[in-house]
Image (spheres, rainbow, N blue to C red):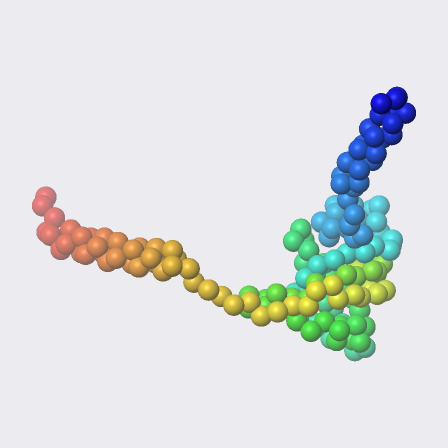
Length: 167
């Protein structure tokens, strides 16, 4: 095998390995927004996360909070866009995963100096759902065992406290 084919094979392998390293996310983490507020202030950003809580309607607009696992932030959007979100995350629901493109403000003049994102576009990435809470066998056994131990300790405590104190 000549020198050229070896170089081409090595180059092909190198390029293939590099493509696996490149981060293909098309959005920024909320924590990164908060850590770089000065650099990103009044810039267009794209963030993605779970819609949590509930929409807080304010006239023709609404506040929606999203959480991406690193942090949460308020999104200012139209009622029409807010109505696209069907499920909000709470203890019993996994909220819709949404992608927001908007203008980031580290101290929004319109909203009393709060940090927020004013929505330009909203995309539903994944619909939310109701979460079924299951109690594992291990949790049940642990709870019963701890209750039995608590009753035994309470019994011995009662017996010790019942004895008169000798001076």
